[in-house]
Structure formats: C-alpha cells, structure tokens
Length: 424
Ligand code: AMP
Ligand code: GLY
Image (cartoon, rainbow, N blue to C red; front, side, top):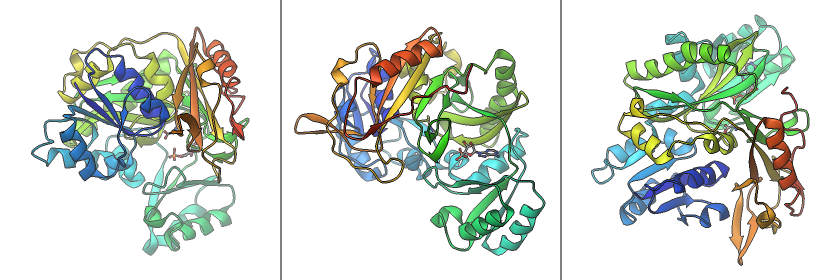
C-alpha cells in the first residue's frame, strides 16, 4: 500500500524507517519530511496543517494510509476532516478524532476525563480570568512548589513549576489576565506537585482493544544533570529499568485499562497512539499528562524495539482488530542521543554542513532538523540528529550511541553526555 507520514522530525524519520521495512509498504511519502526521510521516501512540501493540500496529495498519490506524527493536526481535526470527505473516508488515518485529541489539547478536559474514570493523577482545580482571585486563594491552600498549567497547546512551554507563592500568584495573573501563552492560557489548571521519577508508557489502541508498547524515559532539560531550559527532548532510553512487572501491572490495571475503557464508553473515535506521561511516587503511578501521538525522541527508542510488522499493526488499529495481533518486541535496550544546534532551545543558526553521518554503521541515524542544500546535509532545526543504538542493556547501547555521536560534527554542535545518569 501507499503510505503518507505527516511531520518532519526524528519521530517521523523513525516511522518511515519502520514502515519501509514492511513488505506491505509500496510507496512511502513524508510531508514535509527532512533530509533523512528524503533518502528513503518521497518528501512532499506540504505543511501538516494544510488539510486541503494533504487531501490533494492523498488523491494524487493514491495513498491508503496516513500516519499523523505531531499533535497539531490532530487537535485541528484532521481525522474528522478525512471522515467527512467522501473521497478520503476510506483512507486509513492513524490518530484520534478532534474530540479524542482534547486529551492533549486541553489539560482541563484531560483532568476531567481522569476524574470521571478514577485514573490516579495529581489533585487539581482550574481557573479562568473571572475566577483569578479564587485561583490565588486556592494557591494559598497548597504547599510549594506550585504547578501551573496552561489549558491549551503551548508548544511544550505551558507548564510552570514555581517555589514562591508570590511568584505563583503573579504567573497565574500573567497567564489568565495577560495571555502569557495566548489563548492557550485562557484557562489554567493548578495542580498538586508530585515528587517522584518520571516515565512514559505508550499504548496503541483501536478504540476497543489495546497493545502496551515499550516504555521509555526521556531527558527534557538542555543541561547535564537535568539542568537548564526545557527542550523537546535530548535523549531517551527504552525500556525504563525501574518499570518492573509490579509497576507495569499497576499502570496497566489502574491507568491503561480505564483510559481505553473511558474512550470506548464515551464514544470517542480514537484509533492511534496514546502517550501517557507518568510519575512514580512511592512505587505508585500517577498520570501527569496524556499526549495523543508518539513522543519525540521516545519514538526513536520505542519503534526500533517493535519486531511486529508496523504496517500490519496500524492496519489492525484502523480495522479494530488489534486483539488479533501479536506484539513481538526486541528484548534489547535502545538508547538515543539527540545532537542539537548551539543555542537551542533559544535562538540558533541553521544551514550548517553536517559531516560524519556516513561513518556511522552500528547505530541508526535518525534525522530531526536537517535539510538538503546543494547535495549536502545541513542543519535545519534545533534538534538535528538522534543517534539510536541497541544493546544488551542500556549502558551498552548508550556507549555505542556516544561512540557514534562523536563521529558527527557541525558548527556549534551540542549534546548531553549524561543521558541515563539517574538510572541504575
Ligand atoms: P507536561 O507539559 O504536562 O509534560 O509537564 C512538563 C513537566 O512538568 C513534566 O514532564 C513534569 O516534569 C512536570 N510536571 C507536570 N505536572 C507535575 C506535577 N503535578 N507534579 C510534578 N511535576 C509535574
Ligand atoms: N519528548 C516529549 C514529547 O514528545 O512530548
């Protein structure tokens, strides 16, 4: 079949890499893609939010399956757009409807969903401009640190964790009264702070059945020892060593099952990935957030561990026959180290020549922010390349990733040297 992947990061290159392995995949397209996807698929210069252009491309290239990488088009209703179009309604689009995507698109809706289905999460209350004073009073009843979350999508920047009450009140006002995150902070969820270690669990659901995919842990801060600004993710490890059977059973029975059943009971159309951000507090799992897509760079370590044909898995997701599928996993650990442009996550330059990619043979090079310029691969984003390796355990895999990252070079290249530092 002909498959189109929407997106342009390391996540989408990884999807392309896994889907291309399947004998069922005939022609592969990525919109807009990067230099890595260009080498293995046909890139289409279309934005992920230009539904009309996507429609034309699907018809022109006779696309049978669309895999949506990022959350934006999902929250904007791309799945509904396909279903409502007589020419697109039989295309297998992988992702939730706009209603399902609200699990990521609205923190308040996600918290209400968890509360309805008794899914463990931090206690919370939500406020708007009219209830700003009540929000400040609510903050006074809490212990520091204070967790403030913009309700809507804010490009990963909408969560503030503050130590002082005064600062928390001020930021609440900035968000609600002065649109700190634009429309995304018209509502703010104030949450109890949970102190523990984070992990992510990925679930593929067809709306009735589900498969729990490998766990992963990502490293979001720019600096060593988890210091400095938040990024999209500087590296990841799968599986998470502390996610033992006991914890996984709790996660499945208390979180995954009620989430999938909740989606089903509420009649939400959801055929796609659920990325559950969790925090383990005293060996008990709590949900921090839902994302309605795969993570980046988590995908770069999760998908390479899935041995089952990915096209078949996604086809069964669309036809609601996931229960007929057997999920076969590679027992080895996977690690990825993200190489970024100097300055990221703040201002950085693009267009730098990247050397050393072809010297890497025993790791997988997933392109993130790259482009082709005059026949050369150049930097084209903050996160540039993710180097993924497999090994008997995460330390062996990491060693390989780092040996290969050292072969890469471009002006002002940076990466964290301590991915996995907090794991034993
Ligand atoms: P999010 O954008 O929801 O992933 O939140 C960003 C980060 O804030 C998370 O990865 C956590 O590290 C942290 N965080 C979010 N909610 C809480 C909470 N209730 N308690 C402690 N940390 C939190
Ligand atoms: N790595 C975090 C995310 O994809 O949201």
